Amino acid sequence: MFNRVIVAVVGSSNSGKTTAVEYIVKGLTEKGYTVASAKRIPEHNFTLDTEGKDTYRQAKAGAQTVLSVAPNELGIIRKVNTKKLSLEQIISEIPEETDVIILEGFKSLVGEDLSIPKIVGIKTPDDMTESLKRYKNILAFINHKAEQTVETEYPVIDPMKDPKKLVDLVTNTVAVQVERKHKREQKITIQIEDEIVPLGDFVQDIVRNSVIAMVSSLKGAKIKGEEKVSIVIKRLKRG
Image 1 (cartoon, rainbow, N blue to C red):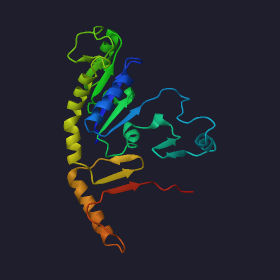
Image 2 (cartoon, one colour):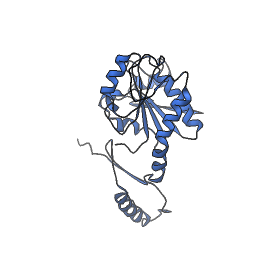
Image 3 (tube, rainbow, N blue to C red):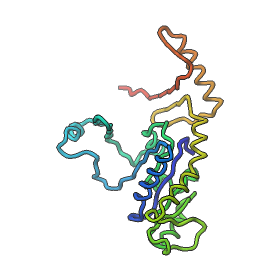
Image 4 (cartoon, one colour):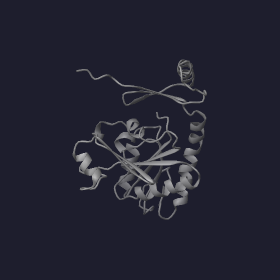
């Protein structure tokens, strides 16, 4: 169970997933939500960088993290084995103030997760049959040829012909979640290595108030009492 509002778009290749994500992101943004997207890229040799560019040369020289800072864009390239990352670790890279996260792909990480609603791309009736077995919490299927499906309780939407129906479906799904998220916005986070520790409201209040009280007593500390507290615990490397 995540403390983030997530919708996953999964399913067959060339079934319209990217088109669906594009319409969903555009629609939610126009409705006033802040949206982030994440895409799973299967190609092993893929890189965001361009061979010969300064950042490419820096990474080639051994930099594990390379930042590209332009006037209107910030890019981070981190050399890491993503096969070892959990979904929680991946989405921790996205700012917490983001209202909705749209995932494209990541079927092995989200398939049976009941907390993540899914839009499933299909091309054939067999795709739909297999998807009904593989995925939990399906919102809808997307298909450019809606007539080529089996009978099901879930809506089948052509994102090219009826993007509004798709956007409205997702909006209705996330609206209550986003409202709850805003109400329970965490004022303290505790992270041990790369894992975020889930905290109930009562524990949040106790730990945060204790930290604020201790820090406010330090010389030179200027605390208003509204600050967010982040605690990061890292294991010391010896030798």
